[in-house]
Amino acid sequence: MNLTHLPLEKLQNGSNVFLTGGAGVGKTTTTRAIIEAYEAEAKKVAKLASTGMAATLIGGQTLHSFFDLGIAADVDELERNGKLKIKKKIKKLISSMDLIVIDEISMVSDKLFEMIALRLQQAEYAGVLLVVGDFLQLPPVVRGYGEVHYAFESP
Figure 1: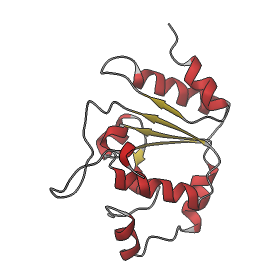
Figure 2 (figure 1 turned 135 degrees about the vertical axis):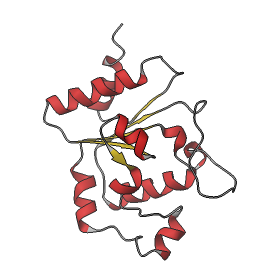
Figure 3 (figure 1 turned 180 degrees about the vertical axis):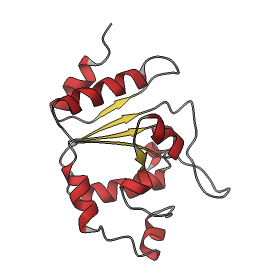
């Protein structure tokens, strides 16, 4: 059974896609096939994850690096660190992408998701998002011992 057809069709028609399922159901295989389909058409794909290890597994980079978030834990800290305003280079990079893949979404906190949404808005991103992960597998990665909230809990 080809699991790639439906999510690929949705993405190509301009819809964002959330790909989820338990361990071993084919999320990674489907994600790789979608990336390959986009790249075969010479489309630009950003392959991102919250940690370096997760990013390496998809041949990508961290969310903080791609979106130029530095070490900020939330939008307020982004402002304190002088990174609230998007750099022209980052705006151009983000807006040039046809597809942005965010893997291991369960590891993305609500605060990180808010910073990503801010950057996408600042860049006037017109492409599509493929968000992949299982919220029952890995919790968000956060600094310290505060309360942890998942990406889907962001406003």
